[in-house]
Each structure stands twice: as structure tokens, then as C-alpha cells.
Length: 612
Image (cartoon, rainbow, N blue to C red; front, side, top):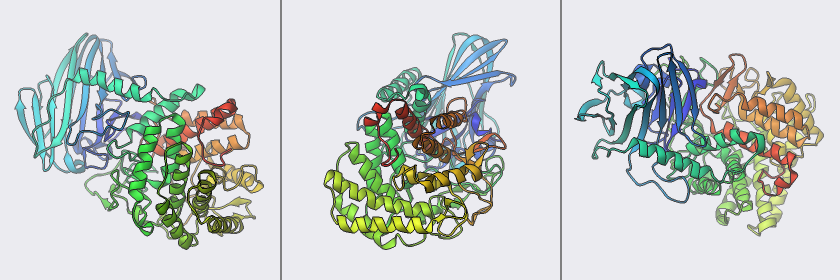
């Protein structure tokens, strides 16, 4: 059975990523891309569904781990009274992380594992269980040379090179070896296509040095945020690790079907790029000082949404592909029994009006950040289409499967679309039809204020006429729809604090009351809790903001990673992991907080319009 999410660390090469457990087992890896089939799928089942474990033979060991500073190189130390070793895990990036250099087509991807003897002597074991197509397909294994094993299944091929002698046993490659003080024992697993020549061997120690250098070079330009700098730097490294270097797309998470409720069925594939994350992602990168990464992301977005505005989707594949057919994988029992396991995402076909606001906000914030112009014809086409459909119900930011409603957040973001078009015209002279856009902006604003505010409960609700609260309305002051000091905003924040906070953390909405078409129950959504931090900041409640922010940072595991949600009852991270949206929200909240400590930094920083 898979470990708690807290036990996993991330390694990756900015094209795919792997999850490494504390006990030295790689339980998740999709090759060659984030959204490819997994060759290690033990995370969603059992070891026989694929894993690669390197660990001491004696299970009674002490374990400590960390990332090498400012890198994605993981070190796990195993120690006993007789000896200690360090397992170094990483994936060498296939191209530099800085500049506009793309990876070489067809270049192999590698997972490198190096065992180093630190003290005494320790008996170690290696167990490699390769199962392609999400744990279903057993490959055919042959020996290329004395120290190399090749595994082939259909188009997939891996080559393992190591000086350790391994043998086949029950469709696994296994072997034991002794590591003494001063020893260095490398393992390199390389991926390539089966119809091409085997990947060339690499020097693992040179690759380690180069990988550290690449990550540290990329992070050099990171802006400091005082006492929260370490958490922000780790979040930005994680965000970069979730980016797909060839296109600039950023996946929401490298995993699928990690449940939002332990044992539940709210299990979705997050290995795609959501437009709803667009502005937050852009701002977190610009706040951090990473303008090239922000530019790559915005260019991905422009390519993805190009075409007819009527066909805009809420999410796309990392290369902009639109077809994300949802399937269930019955042979996988799910993470700790949570079924079904899904790949693809049917929500890609939903109507979510908020994405138009996100796209226009990216255009505006990018221009404010000095990132060039936008396609005026595309802007006009998007707004013309939105002018016709904004009055329609949709499926909302949380992608409910219980039917369309007039969701408050969707209408607010439709307002944002026209507001940002107006700002682009007034501040940069971009666009036209200013009078028409102003009239529609005002019409939407009046509509929301009249129909979304429930005076009986003193709050903006999830949708028009509802009594259900929804944390997405915390974004109203962040996007500039209403000031944080507006009495309706204050009373909404107070209502959410009373009714949606559990153990000091914010739930998205009450799943017991909402008609979302899904079984009730999930954890606290971490991004929503960071939005609460931002609302505290905007209301001048700085000490409360800092306390909540520190609490949220404390929910990260020992190597600084956050999932989508946190279960306050089980005291565990839940949902897909690590989650880009959670780390993005951390970065942005940290910068909002640090600006309150030094108001002069506001001039250099970036935030959503109206955030302060």
C-alpha cells in the first residue's frame, strides 16, 4: 500500500516527474511526459503495479532527508548502529532552465540514484518493478551488456545501468549489495522509444554536478521575502518542476486520482494545464522575478486558446492538445483503496465563464509586467463572445457535476474580462469599443450585487439565490470587484470564517449542502486558506494573516511540499500532490505580506489589480 502523501518527495526534469517515498521507493513516474502512461504506478495500487526501491536490507533504520539547497536533488540518509548511507535521487534536466533553449528532440530522460557510504557498512537491496501503461503491462527484459538491462513493451523502452549484479525474480530485477564508508554505487535508469537505439550511458556524478548547477543558476534571480524566503524558494522550485520545458505549460500536479477524501471517489487527473490558474501562476512567477518562465507560460496560454472563442476550454494538455478523454482504470485499486482511478478529465468539456476573465487578466498583468503586446483581434473576439454568453449558467470554478448554475465567481470573472480590456485601453492604448465594454462591465457588476448577495446570511453565496457559502468569493476583493473594506465583503469574510473554517482552515464549500453531483466530504482546500490570508492583509489584520500563513506553511511535509488539500481530522495531506495551485498561492500571499512590512516594495512587486 502507498505511503501517506507526507512521505513523498518530488524529483523531475521539467518534462516529467517522479515521487520518491521516505523508504527509498519511487512509486510514481510517467514517461516521457507528465501525462504519459506510468511505468511506476505503485502510488495508486501496490508494489506489483510498479516501483523502484533502493533501501537497507534491515528495515529498522533511521531516516532523514532533505533537498540540497536551492535544487531538486533529494538526499535520503539511512542509518543504523553499524553504518550509514546517503541515497541521492534526481532527474537531470534535458535542457538548461534559463534562456529560451528547448530540449533536443528525442533526448533520453534519466532517473539517477547514487548510494554513498557515509559510515561503517550497510547491506542494501534494489528492487525494480517496471510496469508500463499504469501498472498493466509487464515488459520483456534482456541484458544489453554486463551492467545493463533493457526492458521493452510496445513503444516504451528503459535501460538500467549499474555495477550492482541484478537477477530476474517474479518479473522483477532484484539484487543485494554492501556499501562501505567512501563507496559510491550509481544506478541510472534511462527512457527511450523502443524503435530507436538504446539511450547512451551518462556519467552519473557529472550529471549530479550539472543538475545542481542548473537549478541554482535558475534560482539566482529569486526575490527575497524575508523570513518566508525558504518556503517561497521551495515553492518556486516546485512550480518550475511542474512546468513542461518544451512548451511552457504548467501542470496542476504530476499525479492523478489522489483522493480529496481518504477512501473517497473525488479522484481526478491533474496532469493538465488549467486556465483558471493562469493569472495566479503568472503573478507568482513575476513576483518571484522569473519573467522568462512567466513569458513561457503566457505564450503557452495564447497558443492553447487560439481559435474560435466558442471552443475555448478550461484546461488543455501540456502541448495545448484539447482532447482529454476521461477513462477509468479498473485494474488499479487506487491510492489506499480510493477508487475509481481516472485518467483524462471530462471537465475539459465544461462551460466555465471564469476562464475568459483569467485570459484577459493574463493579457493585462503581462503587459503591466513589461511582457509585450497581445493579439487585439483575439481580445475582441473573446469579449464579443463573452458579451453574448455571460448571462448563461455554467459549471463553475470547482467543476461540479451536478448541473449548471449562475455561479457568483463565474460572473465576477466575466466582469474581470471587461474590466481588464478597459484598463488595457486606458493604460496602454490597446483595444477599442470602450463605451460598450464599460456598459457591460457595469451591467455585470449590478447583476452580481443584486443577485449573489444573500442579506439573510449576510454574504455573497455560491450562486444566485443560494444559501451555500463558497470560498471562491474571497477572490472578489483580490480581483478588484469590490474593495476589501466594503461592508458586504467584510460580512462575507466573517460568514466564511464562521461556517467554512474547520480547525482554522478554509473549506471550498460545504459539500453536505451543495448540489454538486458528487458524494460529500473532502479536505480543506489550501489555496482558499491562502486567499483568506490575503483578505486579512487587505483588511489590515496583519497579525492574523501572519499566524494563518505560518500555519499553512507548517502543513508542508519535511521537504516543503503541499498537496491540494489537508484533512483536519486525519491530520494528513490529501488530493493530488504536489499541487501547483497551493504553492502558487503561498508565493503570492508571502509577497502580499512582505509588502505590508516594507510599503516601498509595493512599487516593484506585482499583484492582481485591486488586491490592495
